[in-house]
Image (tube, rainbow, N blue to C red; front, side, top):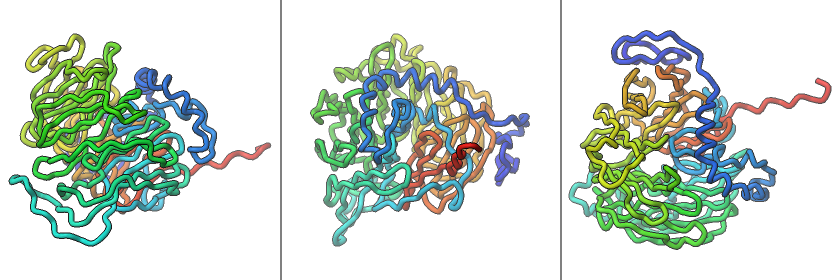
Amino acid sequence: MHWGGVAVHGVAGRVLSRPKDNRIENSPPGRSDRGQRELGETMSRTLWRLMCSACVVVGLCGGVSLSAADLDPARQWSQWRGPLSTGVAPYGDPPIEWSEDKNVRWASRLPGTGHSSPVVWGQLVFVTAAVPYGEKVTAKPDADPGAHDNLPVTQPHRYLGLAFDRRTGDLLWQKTLAEGLPHEGGHHTGSLASHSPVTDGKRLFAFFGSRGLYCLGFDGKLLWKVRMGKMSTKHNHGEGASPALHDKTLVVNWDHQGQSKVVAFDTHTGKPKWSSNRDEVTSWSSPIVIEHQKRAIAVISGTKFLRGYDLETGKVLWQCAGLSNNIVATPVYEAGMVFAGSSYDTRIMMGVKLDGASGDLTGSEHVAWKTRQRTPYVPSPLLYKGGLYFLRHYQGILTRLESRTGNEVTGPFRLGGVTDIYASPVAASNRIYITDRQGATLVISGDATPKFLARNVLNDSFSASAAIVGRELFLRGTRKLYCIAEPAKPKKKSGD
């Protein structure tokens, strides 16, 4: 397999090539991420103060007593895109290589279907799924005249929350949260359980869009539920935006062909704190919540505007136009800048400075940079070690920009061995993991000029993004949930 004429498949440490010949001296990948760890400590400090009480949750973690350090939010994967909402695990150090018979600690079969990503807290791994049941019925014709690539639903489904033992992969519990025949189908690459769950270390929040929002205890007990109505999605392509969590507030993006809105819920009661209507059409982009200049802001991409909402009031603080009318990728944030992109009909990636931001930022000096080259469609960007990484559309072409300036110092890089990429890339220990729908995961170094480290293949298909906690990587396939980890080293006996 070749990247721009340079064979790389199976040659660990080889510099990835650009379309033009560019020879760079190899250097060994590092395993230390001090800068990312410091960032994780800074961004999680507020959440950490609120989570310290979670250290008493012993019985809910398989009977194993966990220290305060073990339950540090920066060391968990509590939501889609990880503890920093950037795709980075600041304390992670997962394996570089694995296969069906190497470094797979466990693989647990999953019921039904789902593209929701796993979340991990302590000794628990959570996922959601949609399981068909009952007799098949005649599918209703798609109502949207522009519908294409659709997979009509012909059976009722049960919508499940599931908890697995992180150490063994044993299913601890599964809870049926809703059931019934969906009112519309979805895209043939999608699923009816594509929204990733989120946890605050005590409760699990599972969102199924038109099927409801649910809060469960770590024992699987239902604490509250909210039904928000029915979405009517563009081209009947289904639903998939995941909720975002900050302190005691859960944020849901409800963009569809009807009245779009963003809603903030109280995590303890499920009651809405506020709801703000949005003049938007269907999007699949998840919100993120950032802290900027001592203010919590919910940031959401949209067809008309990228917007920032005051998390306390729901007021729009600022907005910036320029994205496409088919928004999937989720924005990322670091050090006073938001980075958002889209592909499909409008290709753009932009960096927006938030210091002093207010009102409409379109065309202002707050738009620090923008590019229309090789921008992402389905996978969201990765923000890592000063670099903004993104994939062209959902293809194996990787771009790395200097996040502050938008400059492309190296690249682009053609990724041999992965294609049809829906999962968002993740990173830890100076390594980037890129997983495709054919079961392959490419591991490259996090250097300015990445180096090929490994290509790992499992007999599955991956649309969900990976999760990294400690020395473990969790992959949710269409068939199984995997824990990728090196075998534990035997303890030394006394006197050795």
